[in-house]
Image 1 (spheres, rainbow, N blue to C red):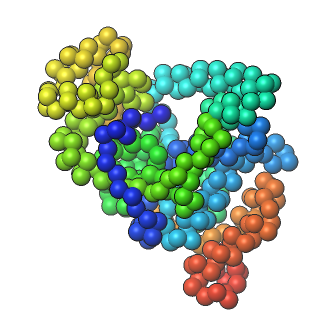
Image 2: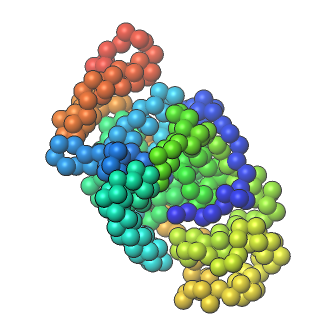
Image 3: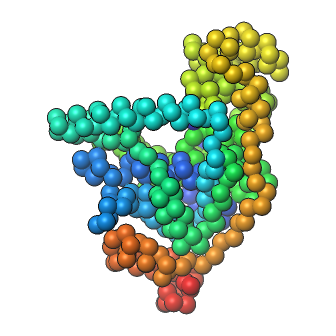
Length: 345
């Protein structure tokens, strides 16, 4: 869902080459959901192997990671842990929306309405534990580090950035900014276009970078006020925010009240919208659990393990997998004639 900061935040286009050799902390769940909503068959169904296992997420990961690695990007994938209790209501609302979407999807199939099929199929996406486990296996096959957050992945990724172990968080959502990530990269793809999750069309996209300090300065607020601003608009812990208060009006209110958040949330009648105090959401965002004992190491690509996972277990094209491995070998060996066996473990 994410915080609706789009109308307030300033971003700058950036090339993949400018990001090369910089460690990037990827919001793994956000990325996987992108693949589950866009990589589907003509009937809106997810891609599957011969055993009925979903492969849309693996298809997306395999393509995205290999392409970015060939551009010398150093990726760190950060996965969600246990969601905060305040997020349970959001999760329940999402489940209800998915159930409704499934009904609409079936109706669209009966009517053979391609646009509606695409629209509602994307909204039924669910990320299962099996998908997460398979994703981690593939990421590790590429020799990339995996970090399991104790709670929210974006908070952990932001912490890694704040510690100087990564240059930026990679996510389509803006939530890492309220967790203090100094930089956020969106639209990280070399394709130049992205499928619309709920339609048959494409959007032209270019990577963009958001600098937290620069935006705070432009908005005329500090980090704590940014959190309060997000709460007025709506976060995963208070979905919908304060009704009738849009992003621009929310900014005016935050700047007017400065750091007197008691007065701010009293004026907007927080208690009329939520059965918990504003302090609970604010303190959760400020003090969300993160871990210090994360291990970030980049290793060699495990070609044989990747072949077993993708070709033997998930019916990927042997030619495609081997071709990608060969390209990665050339990229990282620096010698065009160097064989796969010399570079990969």
